[in-house]
Amino acid sequence: MFDMLVKLYDLPPMEAELAKQTAAGVTIRHPMALERDFVVNWVGQNFYPEWIAETKVAFSRQPISCFIAVDNGQLVGFACYDTTYRNFFGPTGVTESQRGRGVGKVLLLACLHAMVAQGYAYAIIGGVGPAEFYAKAVGAVKIEGSDPGVYGGMLSR
Image (cartoon, rainbow, N blue to C red; front, side, top):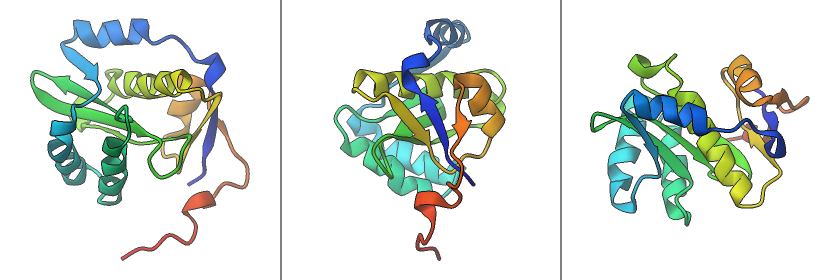
């Protein structure tokens, strides 16, 4: 899986996407520190075990480098940045029942706009799965020669 590059100085606004989620009853927000164990456990149960460590790192940052999506009191999505490496977006995931409703896009935009606020001009999306989604949502482009990139030689079970 390759990496992608995003020009943060050319991001689409997120207000309209955020308003759509709010109208649908979905809240996008930073989690509170006391929600760490709940969010980390949910990530481990719903996605990849490797993402547990990255999500814990997001909670060690100030401000917390993670956003969550909550629908009727239920966690339905998350997105992190500055976890495995500074300037990297991810991991991110949305429950199957919420996919295709724009939750992932607004979580992505929330993280990338937060990175702009912290002074980044570019972001790297590491180990991309849905490349077409990132290209369409934020104009991300493939970084040639980035497979396996920083993930090469990683320890595994």
